[in-house]
Image 1 (spheres, rainbow, N blue to C red):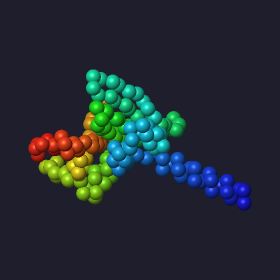
Image 2 (spheres, rainbow, N blue to C red):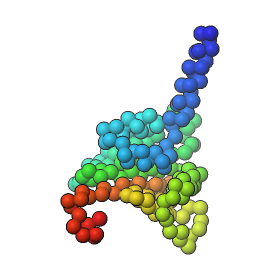
Image 3 (cartoon, one colour):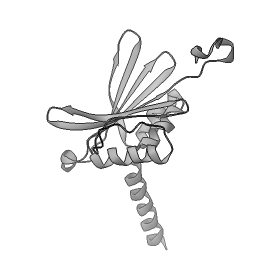
Image 4 (cartoon, one colour):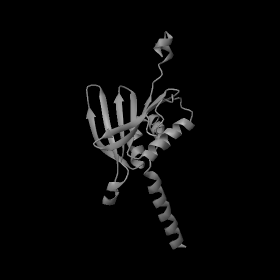
Length: 171
């Protein structure tokens, strides 16, 4: 009985570690509604650690990179998350080197009824701008040193208080 419980516990831990390593586009929306003090904890559970930070005049940038378990992971997919903070608004950027993850993320946005305009470029790696309610998502490839990195930039637009709105242009 003890052996059975030990094996069951061990399998649960392994499954949780495997699940904890993935970060998807839907997680970026969870991040945008997560309190600012819990963002690093959330990303830590997903397998990311703080890689660095930068403070410019009014924008704070914090970069998170995925933990590598061993040296054999050197050829695997590269994933990073950048957090940009200006005043009280946050902007999240997920970067991945996997075209499959990029396509899955774009398909997820389309299935969840994000508005986008299909341009003339119908290739798998076309850049898109998706929009739904107060979310704007920019996607696309960036070529960096002969590597292609695909990004998802999620910005949650802050809706002004009713007292601040006088005209429709204020929205």
